[in-house]
Image (cartoon, rainbow, N blue to C red; front, side):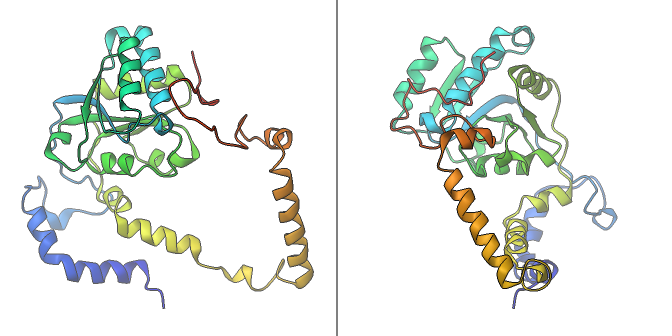
Length: 279
């Protein structure tokens, strides 16, 4: 039998109460514990004395086309004059040499720092995490940056819908919107996370959301749509949809991106994703 979310949290609290108390004792809250509610601001002693960074595997398919394009466009815009975007890039990968060489050729202010653990102390000083990648289903690094209390700048995309519900997540759809996000992040401070938002970023909350989504509802067993003829019709529609999805013109007519039926054979410095928007 599946435990409810509240039961799971109670059990977890009992098992890890000692560890939790030791962690909270490291920071001295500015308000009394008994006065706090999940919606109240969680005290934070974070001090950010560094600017922007990106962390991820250095391969073209992990968003580096988008990253270089966004940095180049922003710094060439009026906003880039007053708020120049300089970026420390952490990571390694098979395209490291090609990406870093392209950055130098474009004269972009990117500093490639090599591999790093997101939980290491040297990452805590950064205020803004920039992740323009559109290839991640859910970017763990974005969730980690939000949990650290940082700004996260990412594209408006279904994979980022969850992150967009947090006040410190700044999303963009155009180069101009990207520049506005950068300007805001560099000129203001992130809002302290509420206790509720901290919980939403935990693995426990993610597991609860997964189980809720996977649980079969009563409407899938009884009521409208549950009769044999309904299931036959459902199978026929599914077969029709699958057949249409294998045809490029029909895919585009239905709203799929151009050239998304088959992935590229080679993803290198010469490949430009169809969804990269240039100003």
